[in-house]
Length: 313
Image (cartoon, rainbow, N blue to C red; front, side, top):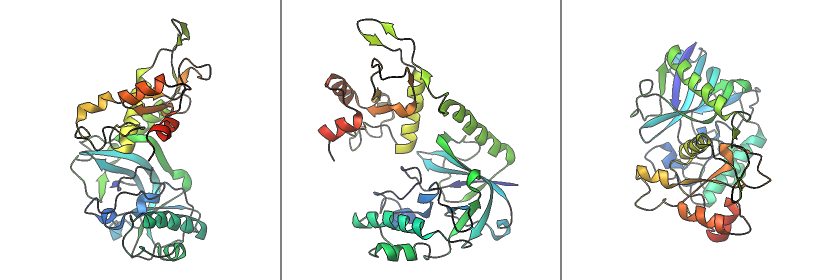
């Protein structure tokens, strides 16, 4: 068994499809074209051989093409590598299977949306959906990781990779060798996260319902910390989900400003509809102003409705 780490291009949609806003933003193939094939690495599309085929930007050495690998998939941000998935018992292949037409058309339609927004370049630009689907994987030699569907593990939240395993400044799209102990250490971190974020354990007790001036529940700060970590890893920074502050302001990259973003319960803790337990997915990130405003408004609005009413795109 061989062990590798592969850095993918960042994707705020969980590598389920290409994202707008990246064309020309970086001096790499994603910046040049507006998308990367790894944008679909967690789309769970079965190929004609009944297996998953995930894209790697760097081709493996020819000597590696007959070997079996355990691979950590991750990305790089702010001098830190994060693991987002594990490929177990995987092999390398090039052009050995076809993507079914339905999946190819779906991916072509996603690219077509980027094209209409002026966010697509390269050989697929300005083609029809059908032409994009036909040409989607005909742009050169494409390298795939091939594995059984059950052997792809997408982590519930990104895991920071210790610097002694992957150097923080290692920012190239390349396969990096790991030894078994290093792979097992990252896998153990993923397993420990799973024990925290599993649907049952993740529901942290919010405390007994107590009578004060009004009914309230004690908050558990651990779930808030996890929710903020997940949000930062997914979006690159903590910002308000309603007004987007501090995005676009001079404070956007001031590290200490992260502490000013607050976690908001879309379902009030005092509500009879609240189960008494909170998951990180129940929390929304709001700036102090929006947080106070949403608490004063009646009827109580969920964050998406508050944003649509007061900060429409």
